[in-house]
Length: 626
Image (cartoon, one colour):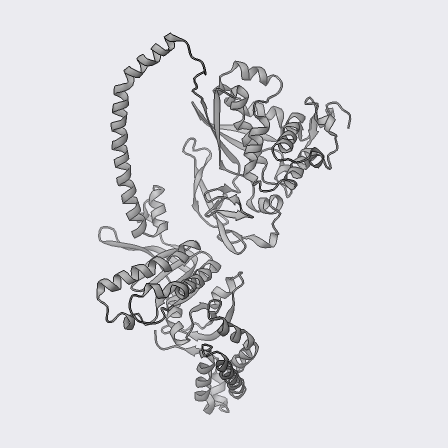
């Protein structure tokens, strides 16, 4: 390419060489990236870029960004705000230098759309709102090539840093600015793959939102109109399905290699970016101030405002007292109320107006084993104190895995999750807590503290039950809720800790150790359901035995379900012998399912040759008790 401005680039995407030179300078000086590394693959040499009257193509500009990303460590895509700010701090070009000298800083920020268009034609800016000290922009990528598969995700943060630097270009000493990325148009999945290099198998979009490593990190939302200008989107929104959404809200922080990649509250996948800039004039006193008149003037002003300061202190104290009371009430409400309802109230909505709606949820029930027996000699106050200590420990896994506690039922917990992986993870963490800390919760001689958990996934209805003015409760109803409750009760029958339905198993993507238990119907229901135990947190020797015998166990169950009771009994008898041998090594090893199936097969032995019976046999065990 000739060492002059390329005229044939006028109608293509292009960038000023001043932009490229600033970028190279920043990463070379502040991030120790060699210039030759930054220049790799560009169609021009450094001497060409060093002439700021030249232009470079969009392809060269993209390559320069890509080279920077490849050669820096511990530098997130949002850190590019600092790169843009430092690269342009105190720098500008062309006739804008004169504007920066003549115009007030507020007018300069009002001219940003024109300024940006001058140095980078691929991006358009609109002013959403402006007032002294604050201006808000809408940023739209006008060149569709920048929205493709090769987008890195740091480009808009770099642009925001450039705008932030305008205060420094006006007067580095007198002005300062703060930059905020209200909403971002960059796709979160492209940032993960193109900027952070994450394998695309490790993240995916599902009904609820974006999952990373099997966990839900961002929810689909529908953005609300902005407060400053309702014609544009603001930062808040309502949770919704994928079809209704126009953005993605991160509900928790995501760390990658010790670096904050995404923060809770960040909004991505929006139709456009919204930048907010706060700028102000610094107040400073020169090192040498010998002007007596100025000193006298300041003293006079100080005396005139002493009364106003006293009044302000009084008002401040009253406001602080009011805020303390608001915070106190807020803390109480947040504890006694479901978090989703509490968030509705904080957002200015009226929970009483909530209309019933269908949702697909994971429902978990937990319950302490033999609670009535273990507490029969305790007085009610001691029982209450024990339960409070128990719930303090056991509720944390629900919250930590993105779940919500619907209600506490005596010694039980009903919790809701949007993701089956999170529900099962929370149940396993509960079991781990009971093993390691359960003994410390018991202040009397009882033994091991145990609890069972049942989890089901189904479409349910969420709505308000009751009437305003008497008693109202937000909860969920449906057959899926009833089955989850029954599964928790069946942990006692099957002598296991965590039981999940087949609907949960089908949704799981995490690496969990599962073993089939039975195909059942529960009391009052006719639809069969296959159920499984989650054995990850069982004693290591038990887990090892169950995994070693899993192949024969499956065969034995298969024979049982097909009506070949003799073959099934032969395999279960062999498994029982292997269990007896294992117990000789470690008495803690057990597998109650072997005994359960052997007892059933002994009762079914008389039907082994009954063709009439076998014609109706479906392998489903019908539980008559709740």
